Length: 304
Image 1 (cartoon, rainbow, N blue to C red):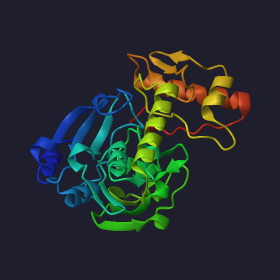
Image 2: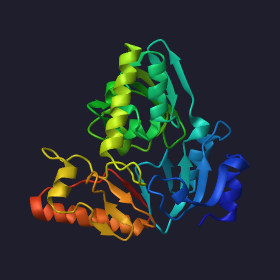
Image 3: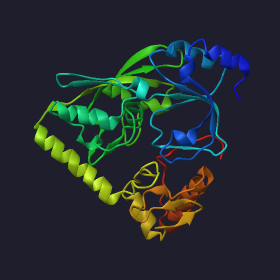
Image 4: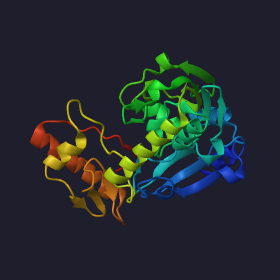
């Protein structure tokens, strides 16, 4: 619950049109579930982000950074804090030579399309990935043997004091679905990507192939958060889940997709509780059968 005093203070840093109280998070996540966020702020050029971060730290109000909500499961009870949303109002993309500047809220797929338009290769893997640049950088998003680590040159972040810092590729410490940002209170503002000149026709053909593969093999017709689990070393999560006999297994409206067992989907009417319970059941069953720990890629927010 955000007090009237805090709300009035937030209005000093955030334009009225970007400040929302008791915002339904089901409208902002690809799972299409979740209760209300006590406060939801749309980060825009009009928001005094540096002062906002300092204020939230000073009064010790929890906050969470989100982009497209494509790897996020919000509790049915909601989130008793502030959501800082980097989306359509912070989505600038600029290209100069073989370098691409992308603001944190820019769609990664749109950045990949912009690169293709300029005949730049290196981002084909991102075609069809639903997240934003900020989230992609933080988790080193990747697919089809490509990942952000291969193209990121620098990342501009805010620390929790509201200061801006520039981190190079090495400082980012990219790993499989992780980066240094997961261990530091940094917020991605933008990044600079370095691609290579390529054959535009070949680039577009590769992107079309990746998108076709996604349509054929992934349950994109249902709300989900993409791949539910990280790939365990030496295994494939989807195959382990299938071999455990869980294809099509369902709790409430949450289901292990028969199309790709690595996806938990909302078949309609699922709650966050259904999804969380199914994720937990999958992990327990796979460990019992194969002694392999499955680590969720999905971020859980709020009290479950």
